[in-house]
Amino acid sequence: MRRLRSRLSNLHSDHRRIASGAFRVAVFLLLGKAAGAVKEMAVAYRYGVSDVVDAYQFTMTLANWLPITIVGALSVVLIPVLVRARDDTAALHRFLGELHGWVILVGLVLAGGIYVAWPWVLDVAGAGLDDDTRRMSRQLTLAFAPAALFTLMTGVSAARLRARERHINTLLDSVPAVVILVWVLLAVTPIDVGPLLWGTLVGYAIQSVWLLWLAARADGGVGRPRLGLSAGQWPDLMKAAGVMLIGQVAMSFVGPIDQYTAATLGANANATLGYAARLLSLLLGLGAASVGRAALPVLADVQRRGDMLRARRLALKWSVLMALGGALVTLVGWMLAPWLVSLLFERGAFTADDTVRVAGVMRWGLLQMPFYFGVLVLVQLLASQNRYRIMASIAVANFLLKAAMNHVLAPVMGVNGIMLATGLMYLLSYVCYMAVALSPPPASPEPVAASPGRD
Image (cartoon, rainbow, N blue to C red; front, side, top):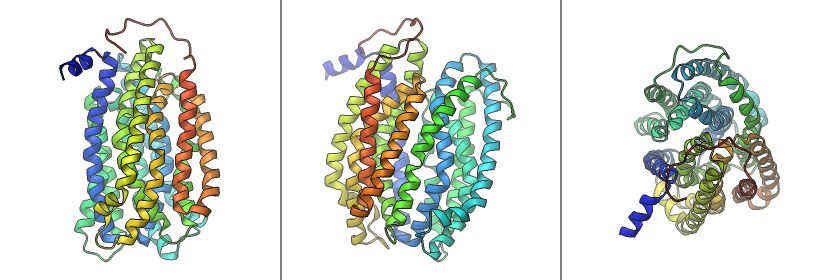
């Protein structure tokens, strides 16, 4: 034990920063995912594998895909910009005021567009859904359309907190789940989408306002939102975001493609896929996301100091460690899948037959774990190096493989084939990112003095 403490104390400070941040994120994720799991238990008890869950899963995935895509691209490029700008408070506040002005405008346009375009979305992507499911999906847009604005605001606030290496936003990711849980438990109406609708709308609103307040405390606040591009951070951000958005849009279609593919497989395939995916998200979040979220601000800071070789060594070591951890999670999860599904969902309208179907799909989904765990740190490395063109190219390749594999595997294996296609996609992603990470990094300015310690 003494030797272990000695080795830990001698680790380089950047390793300790990532480990400390990852631990905080993991704790917050555990609490948040526990709340999400309880919510899923309540939804399963009340709705089972039914048309209501089909409608909710379909609407949530397709209505959220564009806001989440924008947030995903913006966060990756925004955090390094905020890290570099945090020494100039006045310039940072001017930039944040303009950024919030544009986010509010884009959010309002998205909200209106989602509501107006939803009948067309149902005709194209929801053609395999029955009439009741389509009707409930239209009702749910009353929550998910305004949630587009809240999602964008939440994403910017979360990036501001992460740039300061504060990860409380991870805990607040559970706010919508908690509000939905309360609404579902207190509902006295017949089985309909009302509790899911109001829980979603109120939950997203509370999360957005809360994170905005916390971000203002972390970086000193933000001025009045205004439209403008006068801040010095805009040229670098716009150039990077434009390239990154290409890859992010490609990857964002993975969820809708899965929903569309599941909708062609028969009744309740969307619900089965959704239950399995939410269980997998618990494992994905607790493991890889904790390190991935903690790594980007640290790697960006190392790059700011000019020490790109150290950043690469740091990321590669964490990537290999996380891939091994993902393999262990796959092995244990494969054995425990039926028990986990039964523990969380098998009650009320969710039957033992439903447990067998969802557990089978979950097992195929577990195959993505080692590659997903390993690739997240490498994504942060390339983002901190501003290598967005390579990242976009890999994302497009991932999407093309995923679309092709869905088309080939789903007709043969059903929902299991959708999950296997995801595993193959992350295998390709890991191979590509590892090849790029092992290549010489781009030229860097003269490094500043690094902290003492071992790599």
